[in-house]
Length: 100
Image (tube, rainbow, N blue to C red):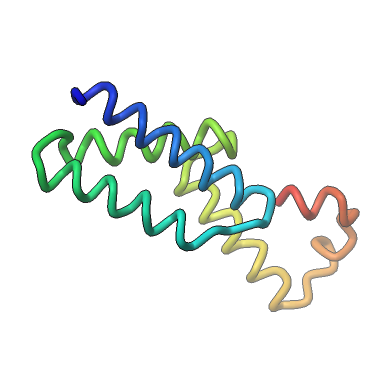
């Protein structure tokens, strides 16, 4: 298996994990398996850390349509709004909130 095939395999597994997470069906066992697979590729010198970070970021963007950082920031803001009792968040229809 060459570098491009390995990265393709990483991406396929990441897309599956991210798609499950997007549908609120997290599979921790699969997530840890992918993390181990990526770590093994780095340890064996098949892929670099930068390539691993890139394939994770690209896969995340492909599934969620936003970067990991922007999604984390948005979710943190929403949690703060809920904790503070911000009525603007509560007034968002449930079907729209589920996309947040």
